Image (tube, rainbow, N blue to C red; front, side, top):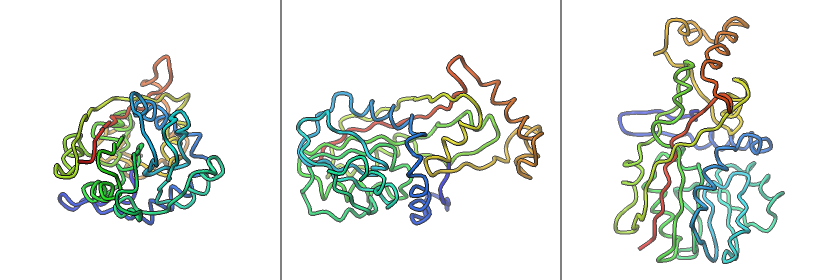
Length: 266
């Protein structure tokens, strides 16, 4: 589950054009693979009362905020134009903004509430994103954020795949400048999605515009597939057998650790 991310020491270099292209390509079928987004959305919605103009950062194909009577308008920001085109079909009243979360082109102090659900794990500079968000958010405005965090996708490791190294919760929280923000809560919540078969599990990852890579540090049984790729039906059958050993009554699991953060602009 890795866009073009390269680690040089502690520096994360992300090719935003590649991310935008992938998510644009996935836009039309994204709704088929967003079970995780629905789980984290429900967790974010629990107990919040957004008001006024709401900014949705990394909006994807859109979120229904109609249950919040005090939200007067929604600005949907996404780096992928294709996602915003799809969003407009479902939410024609939303204003769309194709932009990077690190440089939000909106007037200062113009936003009442901010929401971001499973988008900023792809951001290479969280502190810059949070600073840009603080500029456009009004004082005392709330930010409700969910991100994929460290410890996610252990099942992929068991199958011989590797996901990108997501940030730990303390690292995410530390990117909020204490002079700009007060972090009210910062928690980690495991969320598991279940699949009928291995194909649908892997497709769920690709279906949201991301990808995974084979891991060189796996069992000898899987190493040939890692080093040389899945060479045929035999290799694929072995993967299916490994996945079936993970099966639960609900299906084959894929577990994420989701960072849920609620912050207020000072």
